[in-house]
Amino acid sequence: MTAVQVRSRVPFLDLRGVTDEVAADVLAGWGSLLESGAFIGGEVVATFERELAAFCGTAYAVGLANGTDALHLTLRGLGIGPGDSVIVPANTFVATVEAVVLAGATPRFADVDAGTLLLTADSIASVMVPSVKAVVPVHLYGQMPDMDAIVEYADAHGLLVVEDAAQAQGATYRARRAGAHGVAGCFSFYPGKNLGAFGDAGAVVTSDPVLADHLRSLRDHGRAVGTHHDHVVVGTNSRLDAVQAVVLSAKLGHLEAWNGARRDLMELYRELLDPDRATPVGQQAGGRGVHHLAVVRVANRQRVHRQLDDHGISTGIHYPVPCHLMRPYTRYADGRLPVAERAADEVLSLPLYPHLSVDHVRQVAETLNQVAARRGA
Image (tube, rainbow, N blue to C red; front, top):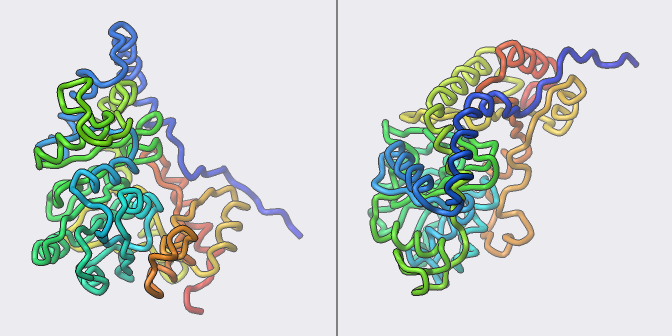
């Protein structure tokens, strides 16, 4: 048997390029922090919060320790808890569902559009029950669903819309940024995200001043805003470190260029891939995604995944098990969700990051076209 000839390894993700671009600004900012000693809160965090709110088109941003806390504390801040239900898509990272349960509410799993794999107003309507108080549309893989239709349905039925925008920093729908469509938008700044910290970090953007103040209290042990010893609610410790705020401020100014590079690379994938062998996830009309992930659907995904690795190409799987089939959450499932379940067997994430070379995209596409069988054959 002839060994596979490996040209050059293609990593799934390489953060060196974006890190190099901001290294000088980050080191300068950290130098100032070392002099000031203001490592928790302070003006550095407040500055990033103002910058993020302005970028998203909201009145406020509240920095938090991670994206899961952003979702969880937003639901709590809105009064969602025991006895309430929250509609979520089944194909998402587990944190979306986890946050609902942590808030004491019950997740209601909805299926998704077969082309975009995004939540729709119709899929929300299909699982609507009287106990539902909120819906969490997930901007999966960096793309927003039809937020006009979702918000219209939610408004008509008295539902709160909380955007899970963890994968979509900078994405737009009808020219409005992710996070500015619902009552709140929740972000993760995990290092691999389009806007990533050098560790865990998160934020919530909103134009609701009451919610913003409630979040500021909840993230800081339930303190009344502006006090130290007056604890008015049961809170937690979920403050955004100034160390990470320096990184995020330095990166935010580059985000549009980096997202543009991702769009160009994804468009090249679409041009080069044989859609009968590797079908890119569909694009939402009216939206402009930021391609956090380059996701295609293939037959016999595990074999393709292994063969690409044999050729030196690293890929990811987002996500192999829909949340309604995960052991902690099966008790909330009401039945089969065929689109999400089929997608979980087929989705494959290709290398994609702003400094990925065109040659590497060509290498990935050429190899994938060779190793993937025709879907449906």
